[in-house]
Amino acid sequence: MSETSFDPKLFLDFAQSILNDSTVLHAESCARVAASRAYYCVYHICNNVASNFPTKPHQNVGGVHRRLIGAFQNCTSHLPQETQIKLLGISYILDQARQNRVDADYHLDREFTIDKAKTCICSTKKVIEKLEESKLL
Image (cartoon, rainbow, N blue to C red; front, side, top):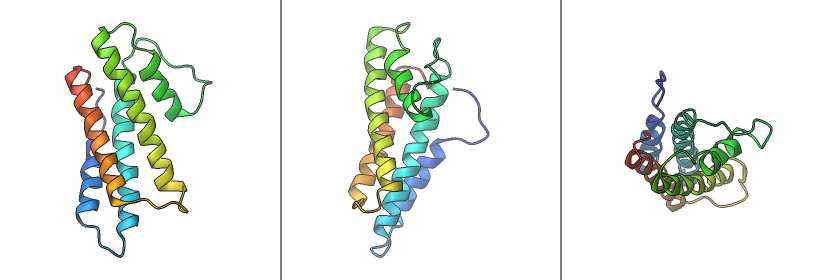
C-alpha cells in the first residue's frame, strides 16, 4: 500500500463512532454519514491496492468508482486463483458499498437505517480482512 498522509482506516473509525453517538433525533443522519465514510475508507484502501496491479483499467470506461471495481474484476490474472476469487468477491462488495453510499448521499427520499449503516461498516471490515489475507494490504 502506498504511503499517504491520511490513513483511510480513520474513516472507518469515524463511521463507527458516529453510530455509537447517534441519537434518536438524528439517527438517520448518522446512518447516512457513517455509510458514506465507510465507503470512502474501502474506496481509498482498494484504490491504493489497485495502483499496484500490473494492468490498469481503461480510463474511458465509467467513472473512477466503476473503474476501480473493474480493476478488481479484471486485472488479477497474474495472481493465484484463490486470490483472484477473493478479489472478485471484493469487487462485488465494493460495488454494493458504492451503491449504498449513493443511496445514503443522494436518495434522501429513501429511508436509510442504522442497521444498513452497520452492514456497510461490516462490509468494509470484510474487504480489509480479505486484502490482509491475500497479503495485498
